[in-house]
Length: 197
Image 1 (cartoon, helix red, strand yellow):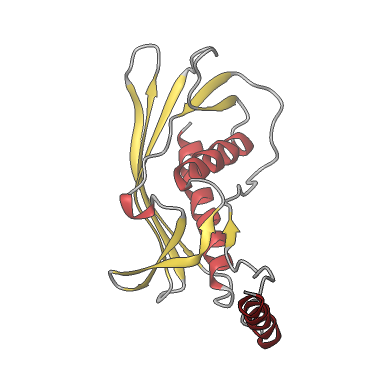
Image 2: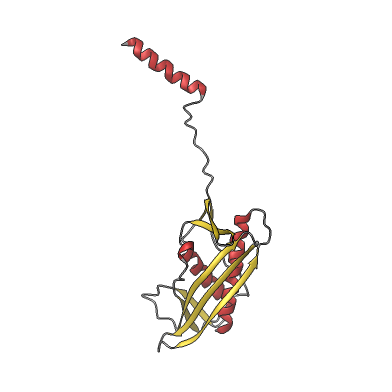
């Protein structure tokens, strides 16, 4: 009995000595990214009407925690260790609200849902058709369709389809370049929408 116990202790010590039992925590290589707004003008203090930004609709290939990039025409890569810090559709909606708020002097911009708040005067709906960072072209392409309706009568105020292309600043750490160019593309879309208001 003591002999078996001695052999087990000896084996455990050998495993420790050879490094086979390594209890040291390993670093997690996962990196997290978040979209951010691009301030286009100084935000004004006077507020008149309100615009409600409904949740942005995105293509299924974007609807995941990991960042998706196009490496070649119609060939996509899902970044194993490169993830969004928030859901991409919520991130896009948040950035659109921030961008529009910085651009529009006479509007208060609210994200959906606005239950419990006064209904907005206008409602903005954005459907993103394509939003892809094309590594083979070192640019991000954003194609979106939007429409603005008057909440009181449901009538369409305006609608349009926008195509924005933004080159990467530096094709070095390309995930940072991807996120930066996506921010600029959303700023371009926000600028187009703000000009219609």
